[in-house]
Length: 147
Ligand SMILES: [Zn+2]
Image (cartoon, rainbow, N blue to C red):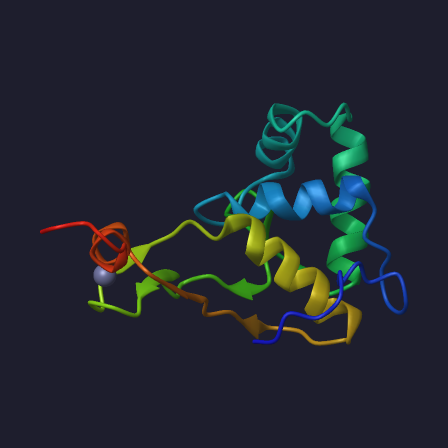
């Protein structure tokens, strides 16, 4: 994956306002499909002052844009989920010793949806590897440190 400009998606498709983005971020942090009231609680917990009706409206817009998928549970209740494949693990990888740490990539998945939508892509799969040097290898590389 290449890191482009800000991927705000203001060009085509849906415009990602702060609130729409907040809904995507909330969805990305949920373990699975969730009802609007769950999404609402989550968005509120993240600091957005918005009513349940507003969240419904945002979800409808995001569903139309293909960013969010919707299914129905047994009772006919709508369940919403992010349309990214977030099943992959995301890792920090040390170039020195090969140590890999799993990292939480919820906010990046929200960004990935935004960036993908800006180009009209759907069902985007995301796999993230951050390469660097782990603390041990970092210390070993410092001059004058005797191990
Ligand atoms: Zn290392």
